[in-house]
Length: 255
Image 1 (cartoon, one colour):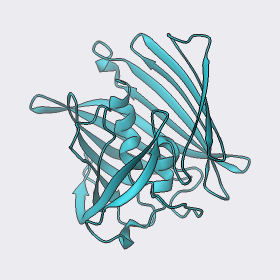
Image 2 (cartoon, helix red, strand yellow):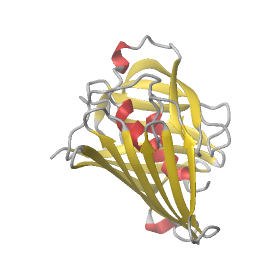
Image 3 (cartoon, helix red, strand yellow):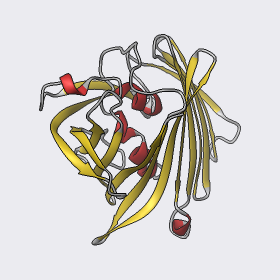
Image 4 (cartoon, helix red, strand yellow):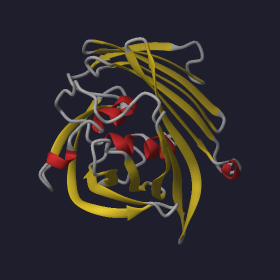
């Protein structure tokens, strides 16, 4: 579960508005888009840069291909080493998840996971130190749910500007071989500045968390997204079980 200190910090933070309604039209992202983030961890009274991640959009036949890479910065190897890559496929026509693949090295541990979606059934294969020869499992999920990678891009296609301020919104997230119902809110419009001094006009939002993860129970996650059709995550703040974390966008580009 330690790997999610950075993984959720870069991924699940941005998936909170995976609406309990189907989304079938993309207007938020394009093939060739890349978003880059730094994660800062609260070390006593100091905020220190601890990790980085990139989110890239490409295509493969009739599917979008999302590639997310995250790792700790080299100066933190003495305390904690993490390298992970996630690849997810989403159909272009219906915006439905097709597959998710993940490979992670966490200190001396490693894991490989592969999820394949067939209607409302998820077929999962994984390998790790406990199951070096692999293990298969399958489970069902309700319609209009997404894993943590596809959810990032689905969430950006929810028109948050039309959502009443403060109204709880249910959404479904596949996590830990189960579907969780979480609630998000749009709190207010706010201008914020990133670490590079760039100012963004944003919508500040909050979301409840999945109990039993590294998030502090009862403490919401806050995320600021650009107040436009792209709805790019710019800043995320949350308390976790071992402190606090902030994730800043430092670079955005399109092909």
